[in-house]
Every structure is written in C-alpha cells, then in structure tokens.
Image 1 (cartoon, helix red, strand yellow):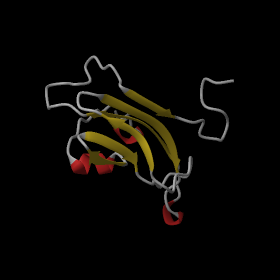
Image 2: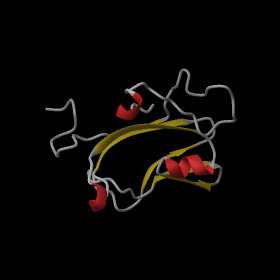
Image 3: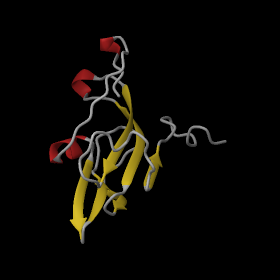
Amino acid sequence: MLRDEAAGYHPVEEVREGEAAVREAGLWIGWRDGVALVDRLPGHASFPVRRAGARLFSLAPGQLGRWRANFRFTGCQCSARWWYEQWAVHVAHTPAHADPFRDPRWSRDRDERVHLYGSPRPGRR
C-alpha cells in the first residue's frame, strides 16, 4: 500500500507477480529441489544500511511467507530530500488463485522493522 503526500495520502495497493515484481520488491527467488529460496537483495536505503544480500526464508510447496521492513532514504546530493518506506512483502509458493493472502497462515514471517533513528525496534523497551 502506498500513501504519498503528492496523492493526498490516499492509499494505493498493488498486487504484482513474476520475476520483475520480485526484483522491484528487493528480492531474489532461487530454487532447490522444489523449495523456493527467498533472498533479500542489497538496497540503497540510508538506514538501515544493507549492502549485502541475505536469506530471508525458504518456502516448500503450499507455504506462504511475509517479510516486513522499513527504511529511510535521502536521495542524491543534487536533490537532497528525505522519505520513509515501510514494506510488507508477501510471497506464496502455491498455484495461482484469486487471493492466497486473504486468510494467511504464515509459514515464515520475518520482521526486520527498526526504529529509523537507531533506537531499539518500535514497541520494545
């Protein structure tokens, strides 16, 4: 779901599928013996800095995975501006059908959200 100031913060949701959508979400999916290996690609966020990829989880057939993360971006030096993004990426290793995430039972749930100014994770004390 996207909420952009330029659009009056009206939510916009998108469902994407295929290899291009996977890369746009910062992921890479490989395959080994019928298991989907879901990796996070390096990113360009100012915080948290993630310069190397990492395995998020693996999904056997029929399993659902969710990766949650948030980021702070600063743009380039020629056009310095700040913006924040919070992602919830759902991955299904299932045959295509209307909505595999309608009533999800997450087989894998990876939460990498952080406080964007270096403090402990939100909600923790």
